[in-house]
Length: 200
Length: 104
Image (cartoon, rainbow over all chains, first blue to last red; front, side, top):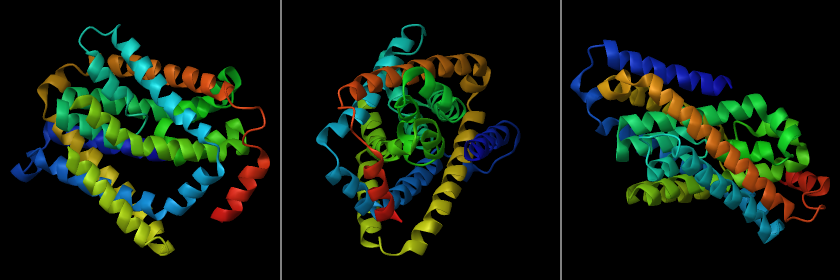
């Protein structure tokens, strides 16, 4: 929660700087976003690679059907966003699919969508995916009570492996921790692939 | 945008090779957070400079809420259906404890 608030503050600070500050040309060039994104992807990759042993031991000990969970979460997110776009006049189904495929991984997906579709859709994606994390953090106990113990994992999407993991464990029980981490890892890897495939 | 996947794969290989260096990964988490903050700040700047976004922020917020609701509801329903396909005994306490000791 603290993390996503800080992120929201950084974003708002950036917006205010863009609105009111007299920025040097090097900052206003859109290429800067892309290079910072490359750096982020690289560091995130190192983190996943360093954790590979843990990730793969989870896979080896689990039934193949465990993959059904992240697949179902992705399918549901894409379908749900596509259905929601029917109520929004100027969001195409394809753009809604791209936003839905962010799965809560706002830093990656929104910058990605900004690069490929511009700031308007990028900002919708950012807000939508930050909201997803905030909703999970705030409502995980309610979601677990109303929709079953897998619901917080589904709502968390890609964040189930890190920021929302503590609240998932508290709401769903610690026997769901491995499933949450597994689902989060699979979805974290899936997000950049899905967004690319949907928007290219 | 293939370069994104190449950069991530390169990072994963380097991370895998350096997996024994625990101190590095503790520092890495902080670096990643710092880069995310920087990224969101830079993204904010490009949003603040974009007049279309600034002029329509209330509409953008509503759209984000509607899309989030759809995506989260869809995920929860499909995940629940998929979970129903598992036998009731999946993911017992034992599995978790074995994993926890592996990690610790």
